[in-house]
Length: 74
Image 1: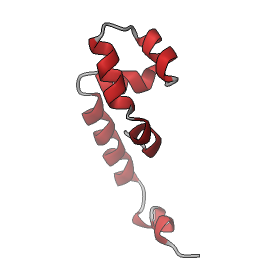
Image 2 (image 1 turned 135 degrees about the vertical axis):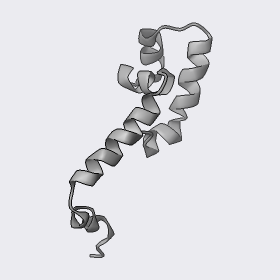
Image 3 (image 1 turned 180 degrees about the vertical axis):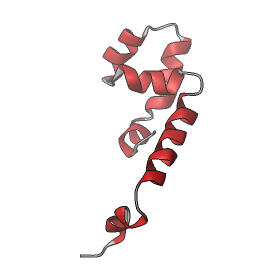
Image 4 (image 1 turned 90 degrees about the vertical axis):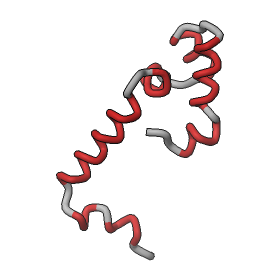
């Protein structure tokens, strides 16, 4: 899934642009200093949906209070 760093760097848009210019995964990786899995995520068909579904399934296996620590005030 897209994280804050990826959003700040506009990696998705840059990856798509470089791919349209016929750069290989390795060339994109070298230019943008990101992993091949990040490139695959942004270019692969259905990758985003698979990731979203995987996270949803994982969250269903955890008890609800597992996520409550994020909202605790110190």
